[in-house]
Image 1 (cartoon, one colour):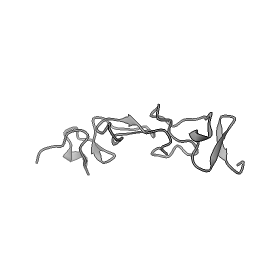
Image 2 (cartoon, helix red, strand yellow):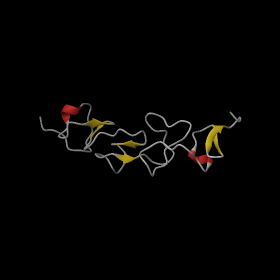
Image 3 (tube, helix red, strand yellow):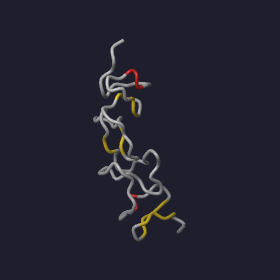
Length: 99
């Protein structure tokens, strides 16, 4: 059976030419950062930053991915940089009830 090229759907590493099946697709490299994945639409087959507002894997909670970095943010400037139910207050995502 022919091996699959990067970006093609896979279930296990042995199916891929690269020997890496990440996020359900054959990938050129292992995606080890929470805000990067190998199955980002239009960028399948290589680690790419998740879109802004993505939760991350593992989750960046209470922050969300910025879209500009493969790493979880550690501070915020806007409420949109925080997960649902949180708001940005003095650089930190805090619960909307203040906690």
